[in-house]
Image (tube, rainbow, N blue to C red; front, side, top):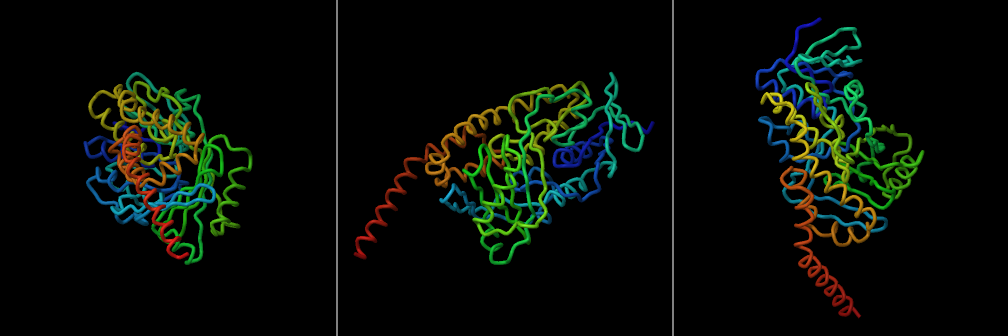
Length: 384
């Protein structure tokens, strides 16, 4: 039996790295167990708010691949591009981002080692590793993803809902890369409850598709068809699949000594599929709950600061995918929505405020649209 740690963290993604950082800064003895060797690839669009990252006392500039100056939305034949002048949306590669965050944590790190089982007792949690070791911690934080071994060992989240996603890190010709170099594209209307994306990285495009309950082979066929329409060659390039644990309702995410975070807790946004923000947020809340001496407060904090947001997102999802054309014309074309979404990604407002800001600006937006249409008619008349 090795020495006892204050906290054992399983998984080194944004949730695990965040928890390790804050616990280590507080002087706790922390062990991070990561099943792969870092840096390791993770299927993820990699969009993150630079304002969200400002909570950390160090800069992420060295791992930011690109900063966005506009965002485009596509719905079948229609496309609209909205300028984002503050460039507060950035693109990262998870392999670099996760390793960089973990390097700032004062923690012991074991790489290439998996957790086989977890046994929680009255005074400690014991993990059994693939090397046959049994390691004790006063508390355990699970940050081991959608198929969390910790959750299974403790009998948590047995009713989880998983969406499917496929991503390709696509090497493309320079002229195609330049079209998307500083403006990501989100494409709707091609697959049920889901969407496609084209995200610019340093020297390539991350393209992918995610959807709830896709038919066998549907993700691959739709991705190929739509990328071909946009002139993005993906034939022969490596495809990576990934499960997305979509939030559908509150579930038990903790025991007396073990806390589930990020994807392990099923905290992916049900509308956008976003996970990084909630991984960071839940990792910090788990760490602060343990540091306060009241880990039992963690589920309450998640309900208050994440669950309410996700319930609003569920409602928006059901309406958006029922009336995508209406939302495209009255929502996505309205610059106020994109600006509000940036505040959402920065964790400054929730979906209720996003909708409030969008509807409040709707009269002005429609007035501007009518004025633009009238000017186009006048130009046509002047030419004839």
